Amino acid sequence: MRLRSLAEFSVDALKELAAPRSWDRGESYYQNGAVVELLQYDRTLVATVKGSEAYEVRIFLRPRGAIGWECSCPWSTDTGDFCKHCVAVGLAYIRGRAEGTEWGDPTGPLLAVREWLGGQSKGELAALIMEQALKFEPLRTELLHQSGQPSRCAEEADDDDDEPDW
Image 1: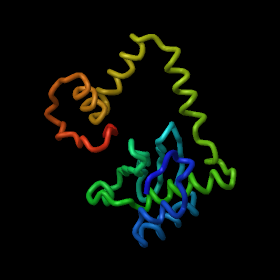
Image 2: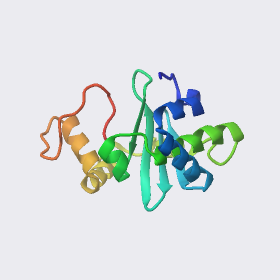
Image 3: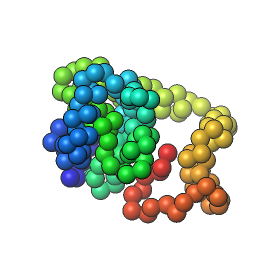
């Protein structure tokens, strides 16, 4: 399935991505309020889903409109499959948009962050990024890659999707 924007993301598209068991469990997570944070910026959704633990989910549109995803849960990390946490986030976004609920317009907070970042000097931004790169290995690896420096932690990047791993 190819989409031009997240506004085209639908329940039918979501069902195509999820196995029946993931769909059922994800719908239950959504209905029980497990999605505790959902933000959107451009072609990407990021969210926190509380299950047995808190898991970070990212759903995004790849350059040619295919849907991509990442979840920090062990099952999705091991299999690469669209898990129940991804289903819950997709439903929160789609149904929130349709029903005008709290997730209906998740763009505001990240737009405010972008605006705040735009007011910072290059030096302040560099310091902030360096501080975060020391804390978060995927960001550090991406910055090393972008600057042409080797990283012992980095695996070969998949050139098929122009998405960073962080």
